[in-house]
Image (cartoon, rainbow, N blue to C red):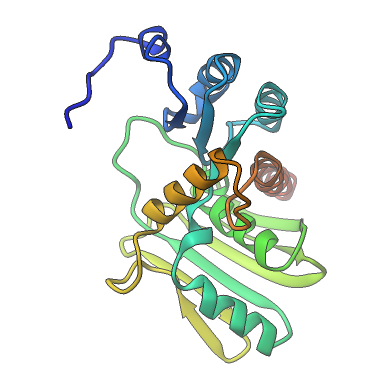
Length: 231
C-alpha cells in the first residue's frame, strides 16, 4: 500500500505509531530518538547509535524500559554461522578486514564509527567485551588492535578503497562476509527480529542499546588511540 510522505516528525507522531526505524544521519539520532521515546514508540536505531558516547548514553536513558535496539546488521549476516564455527575450532588471534568505496550520502563519519564499528560489535557479540589497545592510520583508513573476550584481534578498515572487502581470518579459515545470493537479506531478518522484540519475544541476536553503546565506546577509544599515536 501507499504510505504518506509527511512534512515533519510531529506529523509522523500524530499517526499514533507503534514502532519506527530511526535512519536519519547520526547527528539527528538524539533529538529524534528522544521524541520517539517520549511518545512511547518502539525504535530500531541505525548504527552508530549516536555520534558520541555522551549522546548515546542520553539516548539509552530516554529509552529506558522501552523496546529499542540498534541496527548492527552484521549480526544477521548468513556468514556468522561459519564465523562461530571457525572461532570455536581454532584459537589464536583473529584478523579482520573491511574496506569499500565512500558511501553515496550527504553526511560522513570517520572509518572507526562508520566501518570499524560493524566488526567491533560483531567481535563483542561472538567473543566478549572489546578492549582497543592501539590504533594507527588516519580518519578514513586505520588499523587497530586489542582483545575481545580476552582473545587478540587486529582490524583494518579503509573507507576509500576501490573494491569492497569484508573478511575474517581465524586460524587457517577465511570467512567472507560480503553479501551472497544464498540466505535471507540481513536487513529483513533484523527487522523481523525487531518486530518480535516489540511483541515481547526474546531475540538473542538483536543488538541492544547497551551493545550499541559498547561498540561506539570501542570506536571512540580507537580514535583516541589514533590521536595519541599521531601526537
